[in-house]
Image 1 (cartoon, rainbow, N blue to C red):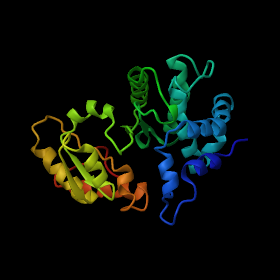
Image 2: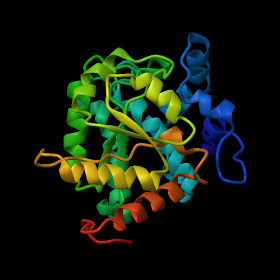
Image 3: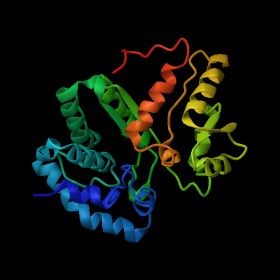
Image 4: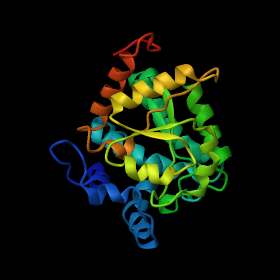
Length: 263
């Protein structure tokens, strides 16, 4: 029987006292070369096949097991990786079956209002490609929306040593970027003159400045998106603490009322 700890150990290793992976393991999240891709297939292809045939219900008895199962979901979605026969591979409907089954199971267990789902349609790390990501992930997003989940987090990744050409399609929709943490100088160099930005320094300052700019914007529904990711490893113990800090910063803004209340 497959142990979920092997999957998490590969991607995260030993966490420090603040719950943060070491730099070598963090770099794995953005690494892509043929040898590394082959290592991933060697280690985990049999696990994907096992999950499709036997399921991984026993993993869900622990939080770590649930996280490990989530890491597998994206591999089922993409036709560039999912080469399995029906009922889990082949057509788009088949490829979405396992991710949607897991999402619905979690929503049934804890309530859809407490469940979020993260996608990265254009990412091609480790050959995780799809021939038609627009169609694939639009169908996935539609199905997840029908479940009434709390949110859908769409994110893209690229080699931050240079501007990914795909970002050019997103940049016109970005009014301004608010940069924090040790990665701020690197992000500002990547954005260059393509996007207005400020180095806010802290999350609290970024939220206040972004809220003020959004309130003054003439767009009918301006959006402020939290996406600090690796930029805040130097500022927060873990993702949960960072999320709590973001909620607190938002709640401190006059006139803000969270949709659905607070927990």
